[in-house]
Image (cartoon, rainbow, N blue to C red):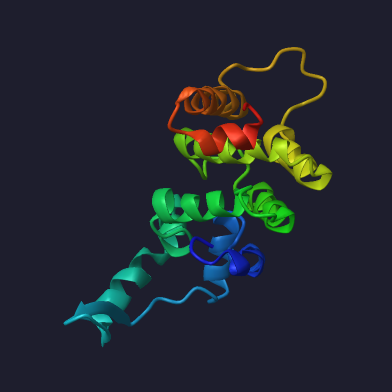
Length: 199
């Protein structure tokens, strides 16, 4: 996702199928014995990756298995989440390449696995994602914009008269647009200006 643009579409589709959508689904996989405790520890010795059998580690994991919490879910399926996972998703939302299908598939992943009003991502992570995703408006691809709208606004009740200003969507949109505005005013950031049609 991060380094190979041509692999992004197949990668995000694979991840969409393989990663459980929430903690409950992950627990179901564990109960069906589809998440296994490893017997091995990965070590890097003299620039070589080595697998060492570690029975004690397996015992520790098995003891913790019935107490699976959100952090364990992140550890198993979203390693190094704030850097690796969020940056990979930002790569999938990138509008630099002509990659409408990748943008759509990444938004599908966000809709199904990381609803903006869930506790999967922090507000800061959502702000970064919304900042990148909102640049998609410049591409005017209807399907992408429709998916973006679903991710951001699907949880709103149409009958609600007032929207809570502390809603994660409102906070993420406001803060992301502030960030984009600051970047557009930075004379060093010519690329962003061109993307937004400000020049």
